Length: 252
Image (cartoon, rainbow, N blue to C red; front, side, top):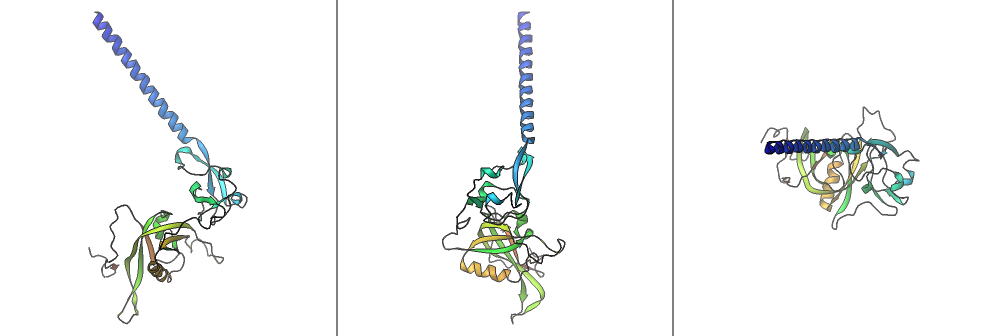
């Protein structure tokens, strides 16, 4: 009888302990969820911010505003107050409208530039639409492959009508900075234009010559001559491939 009583008491105690543990876990999860939904202040670009803009002018000049976001949706390193940046800081690279202001974007006033050009390279900037730069996922520090679309030429060097060919132009290119392009004064309606961004890359002289030649035929916001591909850690690319044209688009 005593053994049965002890067994019952132990079972009840274990059940109670289990219930307390479950209750504690659920309560902690609820508290975490509530903390994640807690609104926090975030500094957001109200319009395109040019590189070099002082943080002290962001709000007075209408470049930035303070908005509230759920805490769980705000990435690390996002500025919550302008005052946290310090009065001697400036925006190191251009920021697009609607972007959250990251602390890493800010540099001390007087810095000649927000990036360092690697030895043996030069910095070259091209203007691209969002689709041409992987929907905006190309950022400073990215490694990209550059694809070019050109007209197919006859043996005499003249274009073969409207026939074009797309090939990999170069790969392993380091992106130094990105930012919004300046708006044209004779800007047309939004239905006729596409937002463009400036992408600055570190390249050799030969690569720079290829990029300048390849982008010279583009009209800002309308060109398809250059496309960037975001490289992963094990991307397999070959710059000696035959490319793709209307004659080879269905070839393996």
